[in-house]
Length: 385
Ligand code: GLA
Image (cartoon, rainbow, N blue to C red; front, side):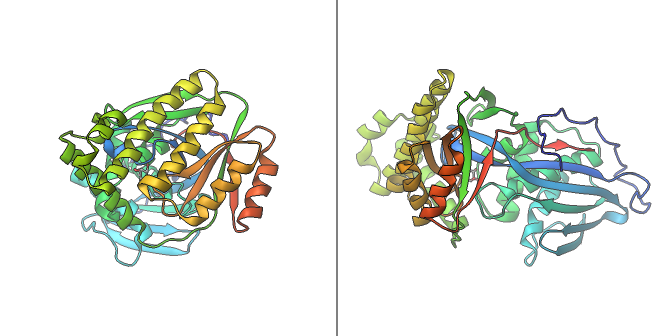
């Protein structure tokens, strides 16, 4: 796989006939699609609260090799984990045994459900994106699938509509009531830029990254149960807080207003809301800092975000806290926080350029199982050939 994600997308591949009854179009080259994972920089759990969030697409992702199949057959092969799934495009439902396949099946279901006709297809899936590391391997698989299906069956779908299809797949076939952060970041990111998303207007803005900093993702391999349940429960608390405050979303309230109306919420709702409202405010401040090339302020906002995760949103865990504490002690670290949903996953660190090696050693000394990935901000998903 090419690591030069900044190259322009290749010309569109051949469009296959959704009604084809001939055998897998062996004479046509397989369609290859790549979708990257993402790291969330600031704006934790703001997306489903219509708030602001910043992320980058990382230099790891999922590659699909796709072909149309006759008679509506679906054959999926996950080469890295040696699993297969066989089904039919007329019987799209979540698999109880092959949960990895549900991200593909959920996307196919949304295509059909929105009147976009599909024929059968085969997908071979390979990944260099660690699963369970909080880098959104699920969204990368959804986005790669959505691009492959759109391309193979000749459906023109706007990027935001494609991201919504992938999000709905996650809601309905994986049971996670996620926002749009992961899908938009995987699809719409631009190389060398932070992807800044206003989750109310769904305006996606690439923001230039000042020189002098390097992103290091640190995965302590913290495996936690009940992540989906905890995630959905946090979302429910945010929605309940917004309802009690009489606003459509937590985006519609400032931290000063929240403070003044604190008594209207339970203590837990207040703290959940405080985190989300504070995160949107930190993204706004982060954008100002980037515009002034002020990486020190951006990093300080990342540390503040993690503190709020610990105190208010309660979505960190001891492994992530150990890494953020070690990061804070390293002179080359500008900022560190958990990235994504929480309850496990990875930290994202902003480190002074040239200090990343000693920084990584410091994290490994603090938590030996830690694996680190140094990544530039990469371009979003693309059809490779
Ligand atoms: C997960 C979800 C996203 C977002 C983040 C937290 O990655 O899939 O939609 O809510 O958590 O910001």
